[in-house]
Image (cartoon, rainbow, N blue to C red; front, side, top):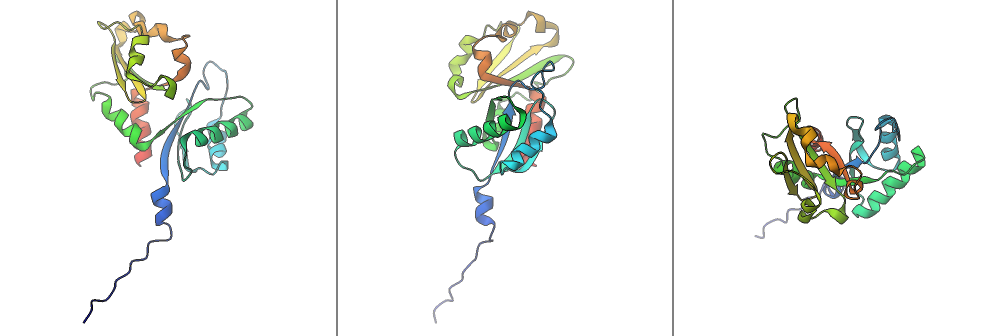
Length: 198
């Protein structure tokens, strides 16, 4: 007697779940010194109107966690930048990182590095054109003061608070390289991953 053929019907939403990607959008240079003001509620609404789902913002520096089935990172970046420009009336550049890249980056930050009263630790997220290990050669850091590491997509910098004013990294502001990065401290970076994984 032949064995019965068993069939398994996938959930109607299974394909959607498999095709959904989780991203964080990191906006550059907003709400700094009173310039280029972006309200987080309006920003959230802008992403939702662009058909992004599970949209959530985190603090005022322009961090948006969302899900989407849209494929093609460059197309997604252009769509979001265009929608933000329409809503707020000025151009804002943004970087996208998916959950896997964020997880790899956070894992590359030494566990003992933190951002607090005794230590400063920043993550410099890099645009594609400067994202390579040799980017460290463009940073005038002082090895005796600054701990600087490249991780795919970012440079991680740590310095004791007492040495911040002596750090060579301070010379980065205003350079061409500075225009191709957006910076978050390591605490924020870790928290963004937690929100993406939630």
